[in-house]
Length: 97
Length: 388
Image 1 (tube, chains in turn blue, brown):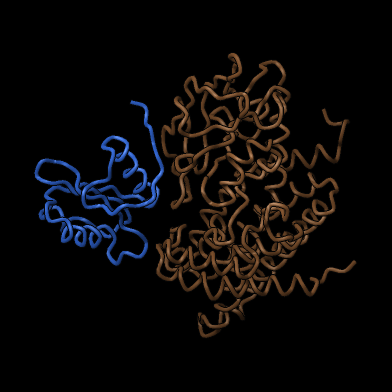
Image 2 (cartoon, each protein chain N blue to C red):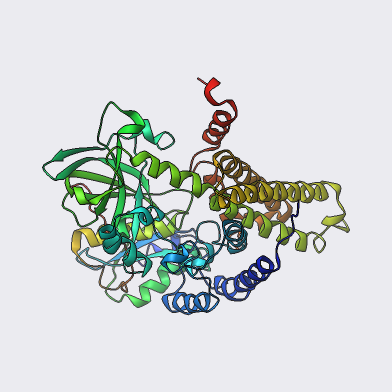
């Protein structure tokens, strides 16, 4: 992740952090008030999620709905949110397998 | 003809205007620019305020505990409540409450106990499931979801698209075809619990509204008791149609509110902003944009208030509601577009609300029946039986 960070720019978007076992530990988004978009949002999240090793992100202006969608999909398959995400009100999805 | 507000209307409008400016706008400074929810503690605090104002549950009939407010005043309030960044789709972030699904006021006593009263108490949420992948503008013919009677139950199979809030709802109104050959006379409305086996929220549908998604639903052999039919078998289309007509008035009012706020911001800005040694306000091109905005706003407001007035008096208002929806959504888009132009680069930045309004206002020409359908409704009313 450390190598990827310098190349990330200030776009709006969503991201996932994973631990050394490729398990997602946190999902976040870079919204319109984030000073440097994905770059600063990921840097902040990385400090909070000490087990995070890997990163993947998606540039999107629909960051709010995409963020909730990713959390709902995770919840649908794991029955809970990623370990470093705080509880929040979410809908229920039952995606076709 | 007196077009002035009554003293009571003026007082209530002023109270809501103050609420928006003193309570909502300051909170928005710290919210995500695309956000549509307040922090739970702010939400609870403001709901207490609207209750103290006697304005909570504006759309709930007085016999069910709502404030006794006529539809014209309600429309004026809807115009006020939309005058903030999230105001088009989340007026005052829901702190004035809602009626839930108004169709439930016509439900049986048993249905009211199970669905209406818990909704009014804020314990349950519902969704409205009409549109399908096969179309939303002509629901009477487009509905392909089928319900087949099996003993005292009905078994529903099919899908719905563009449905708001189904993933968080406890129940919903689902319209299904119960008589294949009867067109609009073959549709029935079912009250469906979302924990019923066979009910699935298959996916999120992203739109221009980046804080709110629609959903796609699928029903697989979903068994619903006959006691959950709302109204009568094959009479569901009237329930849907009544809702569609009534919904056009507040839908128009929200667009007018946003247009008024955008114009107010432009009127503040153009005298201050200088280009080539003179304020923007001195340029004829800018003045004409402001004039066109004012005409658009006034025209939309009066057409919408006329629709509200007719509905309030129990007169036919289908044509007027369609006109209000058509005129206000199109005018709102033009006003926001002109204001963006006047603000230049700032107009398209997330620092100001114009870019959000621009995206959301575009949806308004399609949602709740596109402009073309409204014109069709108006033409049908004008031509009556001579229209084939």
